[in-house]
Length: 163
Image 1 (spheres, rainbow, N blue to C red):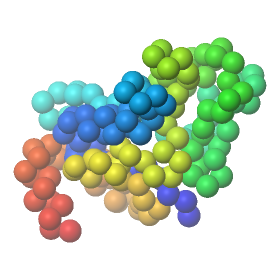
Image 2: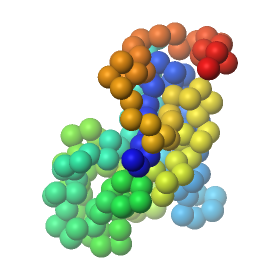
Image 3: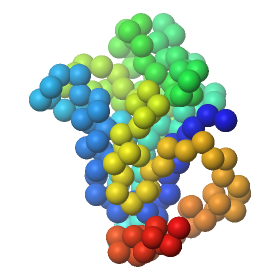
């Protein structure tokens, strides 16, 4: 079984560390940060949302690409943008989740490629909201990961300490 990037929404405290780690990991030119491939949003006082590529099995972005510039990496399972990209933008329009993007500073189409198998967002997430794991979650575990729980950093730290 290959690894996947798992999100536990209630653990996200909207600290933006994942965005910063991603931006720095993807910076092609030193000193000019790249646009992050992961984004967090505060929905309300108790709910945060993490947006990143789902690496769809039947990816719309990949299907509409006229040059086959979006290719699945067999080692990581992530769909990556290669140098065949002509900049048409069809992939951005096709992604129903808004996970394809354009980095206008570096003039390139971007998406999460799980950092070639070592995702910076998960590595530096202080609360464990993002986890790079090969575990296959049971339905009950998946339900527990998405149930609304406290987003208070102290409560999250206590929960992590119990494990």
